[in-house]
Image (cartoon, rainbow, N blue to C red):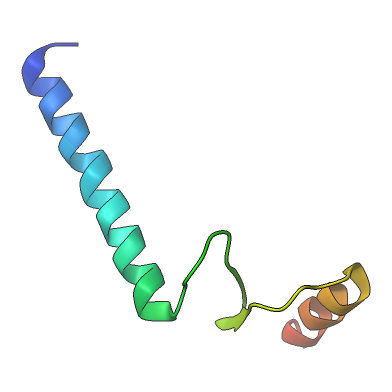
Length: 60
């Protein structure tokens, strides 16, 4: 990869990463991974039944 293309690629990757981090912080993310269902952040531990119920509820 030539230097100019490498520089552009590096800039785009970091600009995108910075944007994602900023968006996450704005949404209240404090750790990764973060789980959101229809814009609601879930930070508690989930079992499969609770998780499926939240997804089904969000789809109705």
